[in-house]
Image (cartoon, rainbow, N blue to C red; front, side, top):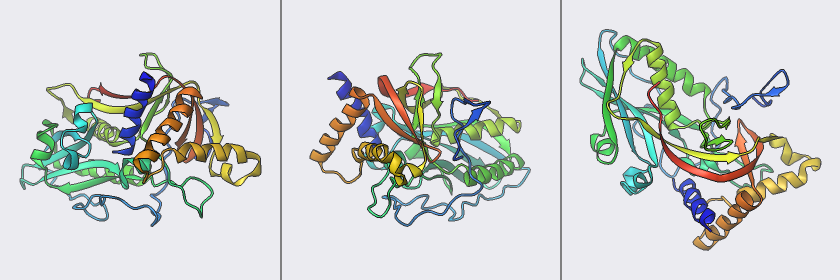
Length: 329
């Protein structure tokens, strides 16, 4: 019964808030490398956000050019997920969102940069069912958002706003060019970290691709450029872990178009049906029990990564939300 309570807690959080398997010499590479694209694909009009993405940012994602001789302060930003709606409620469970702030000494203008889901976390974590489409339909793009201003109260009241260094305007402009390229090629949000067990020597099967990963990539890019960044307090980030034995590769959307994989296609769609959106309270309870049975009793989780499906043979403790210390790069 404790497993069920634990699973329900983690699953409720998820609601709230190449095409070739990578290998070297025939051996599977772990973790599976995140697949980058040549360009960001268009968004299907079916995908709709409850809250508009980056409402005050530039529609084309442009970042203003700074004077090369300007001094730019760099800020570490963290606040509870959906703080604007729920205050510190999710912060009590250490479910946090991360971003970076910048302040120009020359113009005295401040800016915020963050990377998050175009259509909210639930859409990035589980697919939709569409009668006109045989495969599960995903609205799982994420993107960088850069906008003027730092909302001090939003970040400070229940989270963190800390200056961690200074960079030149020239370095900022170089970072901005990197952000544009990163944003154009790394487009799909990945909620889960998948590991073999919670131990220090565990094998990582898949890495997440989320707000905190973007922040860390940006920090590393700045450090590679010669920036000096340091925090006076430990830096913690929220990670959602699945634990499994070695994953089994299943295939891409062709699974749902071939008669030979009909049973597999049916089982995958049934699994995701438990996580569908717009459920009543009764339906949600029933779905949670179905998902618990699949993950804990049958020890199966169908996992989507790089537009491909994998079968995870789940292991105790199955799923965990961990607020873990990850030092600056």
